[in-house]
Image (cartoon, rainbow, N blue to C red; front, side, top):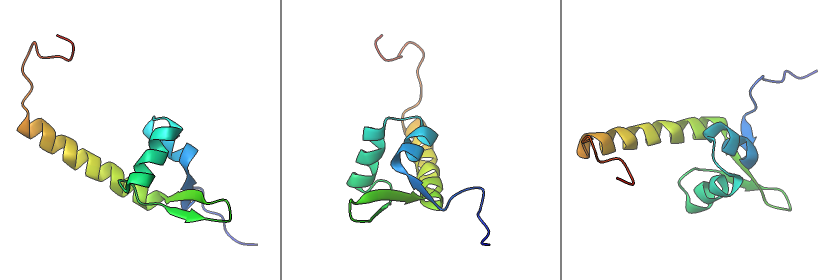
Length: 82
């Protein structure tokens, strides 16, 4: 019998959405825009995202967020809607 890893290599878009706490439509948009690398497999074209690609995406978002914070210092009294 084959060994099954606890964490699957490939995630479905609903899994990606749950991990990122976003909607399924947002997860689909990330893949379709090419922001998050995925593969389209099967006759019905099911999207799959490799767990390592999702982790790389998250790390890129941390880097981009850190750059944003550095380039746009927070000033008290400038919360959205104020």
